[in-house]
Length: 239
Image 1 (tube, rainbow, N blue to C red):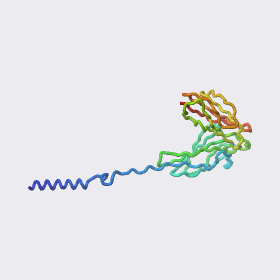
Image 2 (image 1 turned 90 degrees about the vertical axis):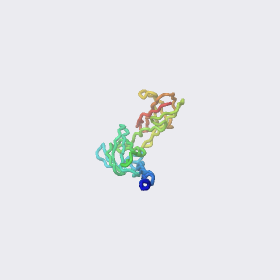
Image 3 (image 1 turned 60 degrees about the vertical axis):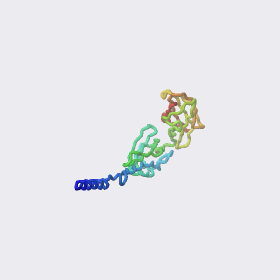
Image 4 (image 1 turned 180 degrees about the vertical axis):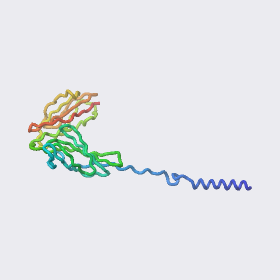
């Protein structure tokens, strides 16, 4: 009888320990990971304004001036990078900023394009603003060359469905608002593209295409003062 009583007491003790020693997951459920940090949002550009001549800044020399770039602060952002592209040379120069402005030294009488990248210390994601173009004012410039045309459709690097023809569409702009005409170059060999002639009434050009082919195109913009600018080289592939 004593042996049975001891066994019963031991079994009861183990039952109590098992009931009291359950895991936290059983009582409270599995732990919930913290939500991910929000990604930064894109900034809104303020100055220099789009498609204008930038005539605010400090002249440093006959060839250079400093301009204060400004944009609206974006949410969930700790720092910014201003990407500035010289449209004459295609060179892109980054400038880091901790606030929503940056003073940058520019060449005078040169067209530029700029955008801002928003960054966060707690996220690997970034956000990029829209891209604006402007001319940095130069000494004695009375007429400006047009800005290089931008591809609207088809977008650079895109693959399009197989068809017999496609419409090339682009967008041109000029500080002086005196664009006269465009000349479009097109072909499957980027080193031997053919001129499709001049067009002055529209920013569109229909072209014949074939399947399984990569095509290249670019646009030269001319204004009434005789100034001109060449676009980047655009490309697309046909399925």
